[in-house]
Length: 110
Image 1 (cartoon, rainbow, N blue to C red):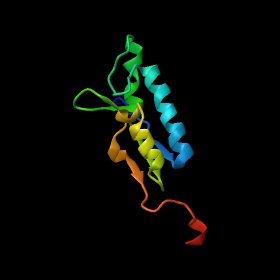
Image 2: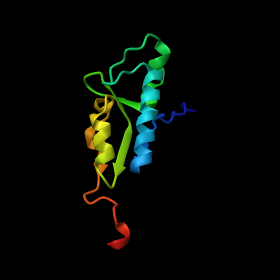
Image 3: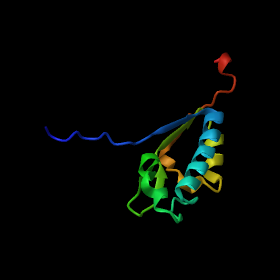
């Protein structure tokens, strides 16, 4: 029998709305610390185990930067803009941040 192929272990996270995006950012801060990845996506760790499973959560760019495999979306751009402007903003891929045009304010009246 031919050997069984293992399914790749890759996690894509989706963060929706104000709360989801704020919690998602904090998740990536903690995950980055555990994997030895700094705010720019550069590996700065000192243990081989830190990078051993990093490809489960991160994609590695051609430049060797680690980018979270995540999608952030919201009806308003305010929270996404604050994440981009934060000290961890360079970690995320801007094209994976999707904002609506009009927001959710007074949605009941539309």
